[in-house]
Length: 120
Image (cartoon, rainbow, N blue to C red; front, side):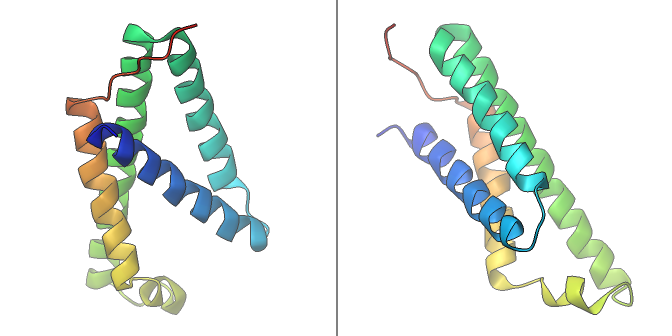
């Protein structure tokens, strides 16, 4: 399997996990985000070629931006932790690992989107 395709699958799996967690507590924003991103990727995969590369780069840009927002949140909570105890408690090793995956995968998918060889 192509490394870019593996990173794409990992980021999608992380969002499936997050959407499932939020669905259990009644939130649907990650599910809407996942459905929109998966829809863009599916259309790009159907058309192939440049639309596929565009859709993967778009997903990579979203992952990069999400990683940057998560880092900004961590810095803000470090500077002013009095906002909420729950937000500070959510800053776990797993949280930082997922943030690193978002950043690395986002950059990788923007720079080197995987090839799609599916024929219609």
